[in-house]
Image (cartoon, rainbow, N blue to C red; front, side):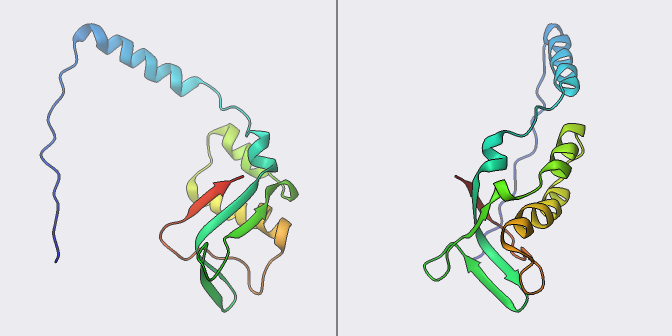
Length: 128
């Protein structure tokens, strides 16, 4: 059974004039607050990645009864490029994925047969 859901028409929200300046100031303050360094718990933690993972010809769903999650010791990686992008406010999802593979995964468990690829649509990542 296929069902299509459509969202209702957006309803305009009217904000009191007296609150507009407060909201504007809050957004400005957030925009200029510098990023804090990545927490040590993240850089020294153990990541467990579940989802479709490929290395060479081996592609499988990790984190199931048949295959354990991909376990990464983040303390063995080099976080300097990721942290520099983060602090500059330039860290995008694709950049993080590429840098995480190259600088963290490969540093811990190597290149694999032909590198690592996350070819699925969704993943679960646990930091321990």
